[in-house]
Amino acid sequence: MMLVLYSTPANRTLFSSAILILGIFFIAANLRAPVTGIAPVLDQIILAFSLTPTQAGMLTTLPLIAFALASPMAASLAKKQGLEISLFIALLLIGAGLSSRLIDSASALYFGTAIIGVGIAIGNVLLPSLIKRDFPHKVAVMTSSYVLAMGIFGGSYSALIIPLADYKNMGWQLALACYGLLTIVSLVIWLPQLKLHTKPDKALLNNTNSIKVWRQPLAWQITLLLGLNSFFTYIMIGWLPSILIEGGHCAQQAGALQGSFQVASAIPGIILIPLLAKLKDQRLLTCILALLAACCSLGLLYLPEFASIWSITLGFCSGACFILGLSFISLRTHDSRQATSLSGMAQCFGYLLAASGPILAGSLHSHFGSWSTTLWLCALASGLCAIFGYLGGRNVTMPNNV
Image 1 (tube, helix red, strand yellow):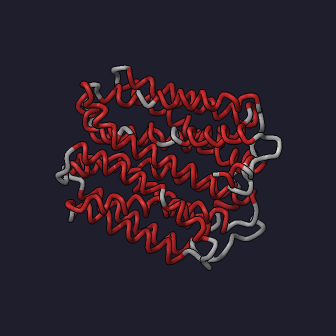
Image 2: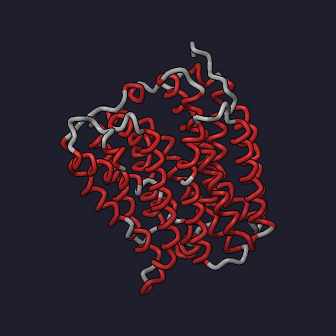
Image 3: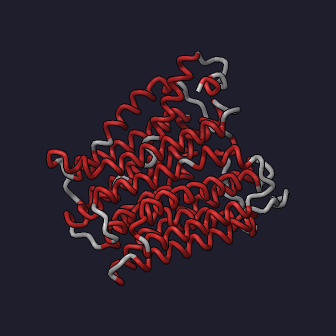
């Protein structure tokens, strides 16, 4: 941690740098749990509002649609208000969405979830830019650290949500809304940064999603790797507890295993970032991880008694493929302009593809009456990830004139 502190700009004191780092980690703590915490209590929500599986899947899908639609607007917001105020606004939106869960209404739940998605989208887009500005020599360390924080908070909340809802009959609504207390703490910790109004990196502001990039096969290979990985990941985030319950686990065990899945998805950042620099290319690594994820999906179907192994391994493979896909955006491009265009393409198309996953999974379960078809679908998506990961993992770059 001390190495990170000394990498901050010279005009910051050690104390102000520590407060900034703490603020970054607390923002990261709000970028996953408010969405993924729904999954363990999804069956209770379905009963409370008489939702169909497809309607329930929409609760996981709404944030993804918000990610795809709101991400381009985040740069414009930062251009007008600055990074610090924009991130504060992101926290306010997340807090507002969490508080809406106290309202006994399905419409309020959907609306609040969409608002949370917009807030998370702003945070996802702008937090890396802040890190690039204030920690230019520790980008990998800071990024892996805040991704780990996302996984730990998200996983812990998923594991605790059922016991919390059962505690003195608190109920799922209050259990979901109480995460807003951490959001309030995050807002307070971030307050010292509001005196600054710094703008994001020019590459972010000028993200025009170049049409030329969309015509490149390599760009599509990376985009489909990230999109298909997110497709099966968000199916698991939304429906894994229900899948585990159908496999014979109790609701509390299912919530704990979903939490393990999320924590495991954050661990690869610690392992892969130093490893990537030593590899000539990433073809075999990406392919093997994706195929292992496919095997784990089928393991949940045919050997549910080993669900803890499948859940943790699946989470690790999901996080690893995501980190590899993100690294390809830098490794397969020539400059920040090209990387920004590819990132915009991957984020827009990838999240839209991922958004279809939870709804499709719910529809398949409603039609067939079991999760077997959904798990085969996840295995197929992982198998395709292996193909596109092998192609995207080659040591090549897009043409310089794109």
